[in-house]
Length: 63
Image: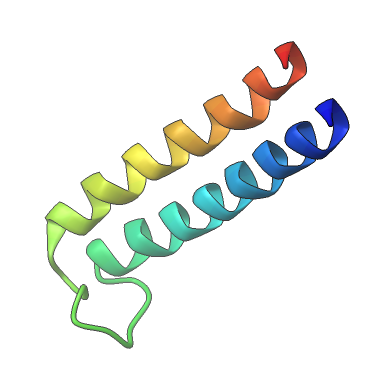
């Protein structure tokens, strides 16, 4: 059970990091293609997602 939970936290963390990077790039108007383009608040949300995802990846070792 522990290994499944650790794997799940890793997958969720990686997904959050990648999603956050996309949000940052769209928020600062580098990556086109959505309503988030050029809206700086999405860059902030992306930064939070990257930090939270990285924490999940790092803290999964304790589980």
